[in-house]
Image 1 (cartoon, rainbow, N blue to C red):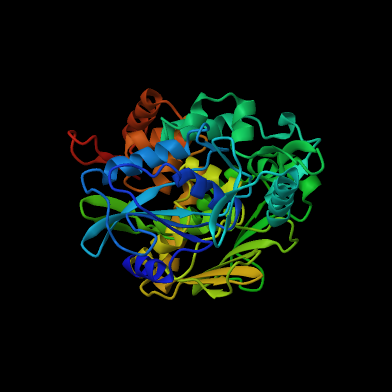
Image 2 (tube, rainbow, N blue to C red):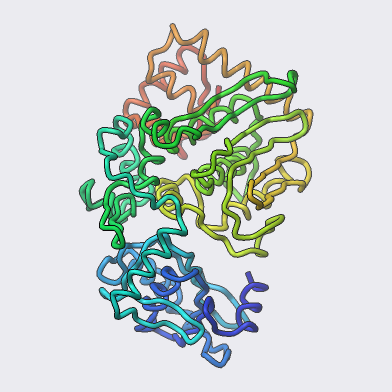
Length: 473
């Protein structure tokens, strides 16, 4: 991060960089710049730096409060509409505290205090004429295919209960999020899943809404080429040892891909300080989210997720913003489908833009035994993760156990008990609270299921009573 800040200061202000004087309060025109960056091509804002590059810093006692105020204001429709989830980060630089704000390009047209701002090399400027505003809407529409409107798409075309499930996940992850106060119609519009094209007058649900919530047959009718092929090619490298052909919405597709990974790849636990983390889940949740969030869905190239004897390889159609290998801190993250990405972030299935790739690189050596992970951005985005023979043997054992749990025990356990058991299989060492969250089963009911599974000697409870303990098969 220090390297990036140094580069931004050396580069100076321009169409994608803005410095702002700030000691104890947020600048009054801060959200005009945020709005302009969202409407143009994204950018970086540094608070505590003067226009002439002088580093003056933020009052250290105020820095945390300023970051919190910024996050709250970015979710305030009176200040920024539509809302856009943004975070501010404190950075130590040259012995002083600065605040860095990364603003990505947005697929929507945003307003600050009910005014529309755009960006040029001279700074922020307000759009005053209907022609300027129309051109901005046209530019946004041509940039993001997820904004394509389906005027005849209805709520009845969504998978049963999927919207309620997503909104419940948002409430659990972000209890104070302003979306929680909205009804469904307001939620669709604020999240950018229902829009009006001001150039054509057409309005309705978007491709993003279709992909996030649609029934398989609805998605197949609108996008007949859409599918994700998950394959295991270890013994039979010409065809496959196991296959999952996924044609459901993206929320359910995420679950299916993570279950496929659980079935065939080992779990490795790692102590980071005093916290136990699953290396497999940490790495592959980012790779799966990246596949689903950043795919170019108008392209007929099928997405593939293949486990080979020596690697896992993921390919999906892409609208490249960079070309070549992506390395942490050496590229500007660019959201290909911002509305889809925003929903995944709100439900806790992806990190802040750019953080995912950093996490994969960070933990790859501990999980894979080497740092040979590749993220290659071209017309077809390719991700490769090296896999060792030992990992595949462990994955084989995982698959056999998975089959046993879902086969032999199906007649012995009810649906709720099987859900709890699969959650423990999915995340070894999970506690009751997280089981309740993952399965969406009330905590008291989860507790009853756990006692039954322990009595049947299918699982064990470990850890101290004081901390609540955790469960393993």
